Amino acid sequence: YQYIIHGGKTPNNELSDKIYVISVVCKNNKKVTFRCTEKDLVGDVPEARYGHSIDVVYSRGKSVGVLFGGRAYIPSAQRITEKWNSVADCLPHVFLLDFEFGCSTAYILPELQDGLSFHVSIARNDTIYILGGHSLANNVRPANLYRIRVDLPLGSPAVNCTVLPGGISVSSAILTQTNKDEFVIVGGYQLENQKRMVCNIISFEDNKIAIREMETPDWTPDIKHSK
Image 1 (cartoon, rainbow, N blue to C red):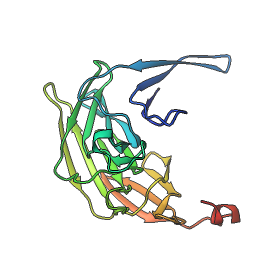
Image 2: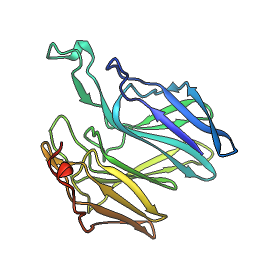
Image 3: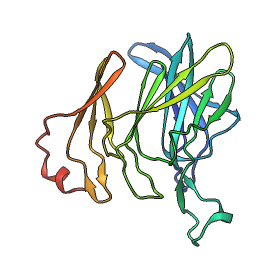
């Protein structure tokens, strides 16, 4: 198993554009040893960001990383405020990252018009599902549901996006897989100052996705009243 880390904020409130791959080297006597390797990319290298998603898809016996969304600091020449850390949503490009050869390619898909951050992403085989998210420019949490499919033939990869019905408005939520074909979404926000107290079950059957509400837990007072 490998774990991919990209972006995020440093302790100095700077944004990182580095990519790390953490892998398990050995496991013996109940002790696990990890190795962390920094990956250099060439091509359309994604800018430093946070609030994005990065997943891995598999097609025709090959794998590739898929990076989407997030926020970045506005270049100083484009700022309309004196604040050095003004941010904006990154362009809605889909990046395919080949970790073996260290190359990155950006794709512009007409279905993805607005930048999104803090969305939920689910990877299944050759497909990424993008759910919800927050658009900083419009300050909205649209009920998005996108299906991004990646085909990896011998030649150039093919990436296509489909807008699906049945999305939900949510940002900054936690996604947990409960079995092979089922996930649960907990927490997050539905409005700027309104937490999302409803939980959802996301299930897959025959490559079709269904989202339904589940029974709401009996939240403790500190969860109900905290930010």
